[in-house]
Image 1 (cartoon, rainbow, N blue to C red):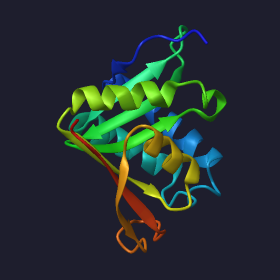
Image 2 (image 1 turned 180 degrees about the vertical axis):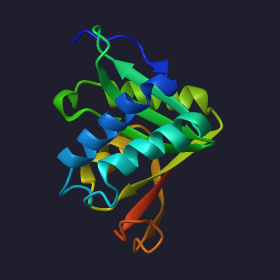
Image 3 (image 1 turned 180 degrees about the horizontal axis):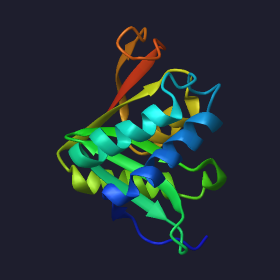
Image 4 (image 1 turned 135 degrees about the vertical axis):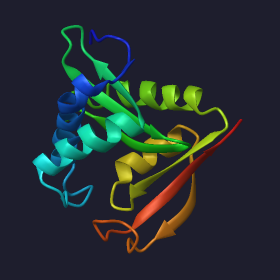
Length: 152
């Protein structure tokens, strides 16, 4: 696959970032609970909150089509989504390596307990389970797992 390097996303990328998240979540229903927000709400949140307040990285193909998104919020991997058409090609691994390089003191993240693929991915990348919950603390009310990657 021919794709460009990751780059910081700016306000002009809000729609592309939101669309990767929306497509990825939609394709993952079953492994993750259905979205609790409309597409319009997701687009507004990305534009008004995520892009201005968090560190957002966008990976595109050589033609500028968005393929994958990483959102860092302090020491958290807030979002990591790969377009369903290009999963399994190393894009997520490249983004998690970028996250580690940007946060060498360590990272943490949440994933749903039902998302066994994500769990395998994070374990393979050196994360370990720090906590499990019944989901009462998330919007979807679905059991989740907090993973941590300690500084080497």
